[in-house]
Length: 420
Ligand SMILES: Cc1cc2nc3c(=O)[nH]c(=O)nc-3n(C[C@H](O)[C@H](O)[C@H](O)COP(=O)(O)O)c2cc1C
Image 1 (cartoon, rainbow, N blue to C red):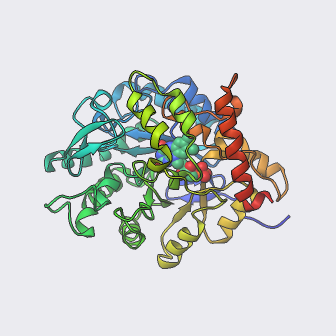
Image 2: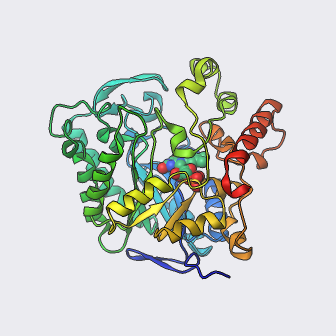
Image 3: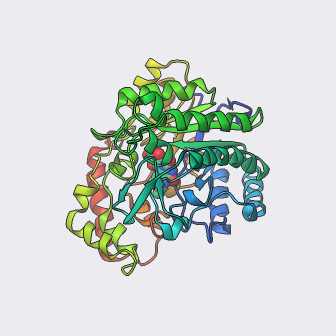
């Protein structure tokens, strides 16, 4: 057996993880009335029992205006007992637990966030579809305060760590993006100005995290399209985040509005996405997907460790930053490659949806162990409407969706170099 640090403990700020694996924030869509459910708890307990060092409850909004899905959590007193029940159960199963905190900004509809959606500047959101307005300075200060209060809330709920979402074109990332942020005040214009909101949030978060909560940040290395945040700017953003003394920086890329498949790797299963949408509420989206889905949601060819080259560049240019790798780890060899490249921790998304016990299975097996996840992204297409699930757990799969899954599996198998 080759010596490996994979199953060695790691100190993430004030929190010690039993190994180097974190379940990434992958939206579960399992909340009811924005509150945790037994289903959400059971999934995270299964991942904890399955061997991860830490699991991450995905995409919790810091306040009501930041919610973009009905099945999403947001910080409010009423859910505290259920949140505490969930974190206790996860701890009992042996893992630490983190929660991703964010604000969707313009990626919502007034029906869901119960107010006019806000972005750094006003505009039109094709996906809802809805007009959104520019956020005022007073509202910026309020949301910054809510991030800090959310950290206290999470501590009281029993979380060990908070993950601040600065990527994927949610509110902080919208401020960083020069096209979405056309402000003329001190929050827009130069990169230093576009980073101001993020810096204020991180100041507040670090103040409230004190010395007993770990803080990690998920950021974009690049937005992945010409008018978005470039990689050169991404490097400056990483330096700014690192200067706050956060305990981990997760390197992702892509935006939910323009380049979602860069985040996830592969193709969006358009038939799955359209199939589950409510035809009355989303008829225009279903129609749009049928006509021009591949143009609006371009494919990003999948290969294992698809972010590794970019992530290595960040590591090389900012060697003292505690970077965490995410993106296409599908096998023991993939995990070892990432650790050997100098990353101390990595995150897993897809493979833990397919098999919550992937980490234990990897531990028990030899170096050739790999996930059976075929990266069809069925889980992604489904998650926008229903609870997150692997296609293998769905009974009576409609034929057209099964065909779509099979086709994606064939394409990915031909591209995935570890599978050969
Ligand atoms: C079903 C699903 C939902 C996701 N939801 C989120 C999310 O809420 N927040 C986030 O930052 N990333 C989200 N992601 C992205 C993952 O956290 C991760 O960055 C990406 O899938 C790459 O890692 P992987 O190849 O190990 O899956 C999601 C991914 C999947 C598959």
